[in-house]
Length: 186
Length: 118
Image 1: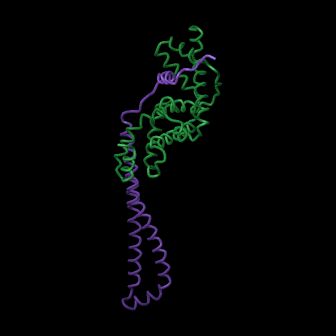
Image 2: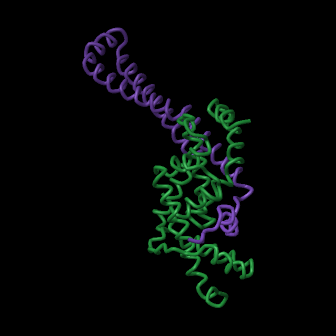
């Protein structure tokens, strides 16, 4: 069954049909929120709030974009709202420099798997939220630029620039984080 | 210039190593419970509160109208009713005002009961 089928049933008053949409998209919503907030407790509240908002506004869903895109836009807006309210934004500026990604990846592989996870986690935590979000949407959610345009309310050129910058930034921070390790391993 | 970039697949693999917590298994139930409460509140609002406000507004208008009309025609009305049965005008006026007050209190009671239930 496609999303439209359940949406129609919800509009007609069948509340339980909304459960199918929650089950289908809750994990995606959670991971998108987590890429921005990086705090599981807040994430759960945001995801709940986003689904409730989607439910109460479902009659305004025109179907121009897919339900998933529409929902993710709500999720992203809610996440940034909480981010500003709780003052969780990463305000410090990190300069994105050219990094040899292959070399860095090789160095990373020399570290224990558990530690690799810690470094990557630390790196993502330090990234500005918008940059972390584009990486999540494009690489981990395999979204197309068109969908990202709608979710982030930016044009595709801006997203391309942001993607390039985010990737550079990711490796710059990772390099900083690995500095001690790299020094000893390279 | 030598390529120093990771391929998209390799970069994805790298990102996938990060901690990706999944949503709680109860999340769907939690959301559905909240939605059901919202739905119930909306139904209660539609059924009681909206109509109550309508009745209260109507009763107020009627009361205001009733008082002014009574003031205007009071003397004539009192004269006429008292000519039929002495003291009838007071009884009729008292009954009308009591009914109006009763209606207002009944609707207020409805409102308060629903608020308390929520």
